[in-house]
Image: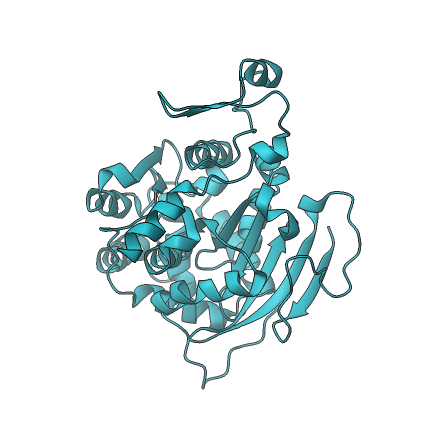
Length: 370
């Protein structure tokens, strides 16, 4: 996989190839890095996976990572076998929050780490810099909270939100962490950002009589310390713990909330679901899973595909277990106004069939103008 880098000093045009970029046989495997300066959040490192010059024929996702990781967590998920067909027809804009790029230096003491609200509002700067019209949001944990705020602030730039372990308030999480985590290993692990991250990521595996506790801690600590700056990680944790309550009431875009039944945040995701208009939200709870991207990636990929199809995206990607030839041969070539179904023309290419349906965005625009 090739990687190139370009600063935000010169904004790319839609057809501009980033500096030092070379041709790639598979456009969806190419990655380009950019540094984007924002008004409130400072510099964001942006990794683009795929060919944005084809965005009119692709689904474009923007991802924001959780605490204790960076863009690599979503890039690894996108590169997993269960995401192959989605990746081939999509572009991904992976965001690193300040100081979370690989091997980044510690942020200076004078730097005011942005709130989750600021991060969410500033994501539109990334879209403008890359000349991207609208995106599908995909976030986990703290990143899901950031993307929810982005969707509320800029609904006309968002086709939908896929939020994994999205939470609205912090108090009960901190209380749960103090009771459950400290009871497990009160003397050996200091009360720090790193110890909070353990419970945040692996809470379901760190309580009870799990014989793999020590292994989980050791492997995660090694991974956490290998490429991330611990001071910067702590600043993101602090921003997460200090976040203001989030409500999705009045949200103008469709949302799917995903959590695992073993996740320490499952009850908080349920609370967020109760407070939103049900015609705008779908909730998925995955059994026997806590960290759903690691424990059940295929189920997450399937839910992403179903949700995207509902937004008029990735319509040529056939669901697992459905024969591709049979699926397309039964389609005619028109939009049936009597029942609202969209059918595939025999002569249309799959790339054209994957073009986003932006009718919903035009409706939102009209509502705002009123």
